Image (cartoon, rainbow, N blue to C red):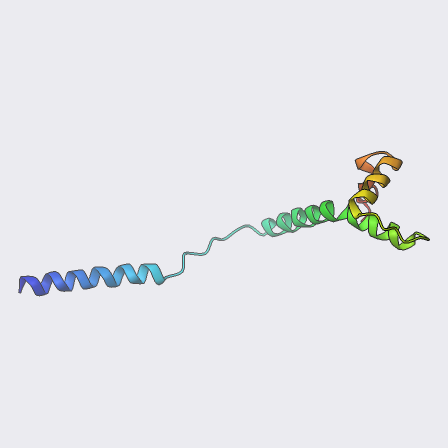
Amino acid sequence: SLSSSSLSLTTNTQTTQTQQLLEPPPKKIYPQWHNGVAGGVAGAGARLCTAPFDLLRIRRQLSATMSKESMFVSLYRIARAEGGIPSLFRGNVAA
């Protein structure tokens, strides 16, 4: 009788542990403004990373000749000719 009760206790403990592992964690409830802030930060980060390449793409499309130089060399030439690194991000506020 002692072994059957200890077996039952062990089985119940294992069942409880298994149920705890299978249950999803409780959902966290965030304020609504978190979504807006996260979207704004993601959009600003994406624009910051892609702005120089977008500028280069437009410049290459508008140029009369096809340049064979690499993308980074082109960005360096544009930045050097027009006032440094900040010139690659000119106009981002309006975009």
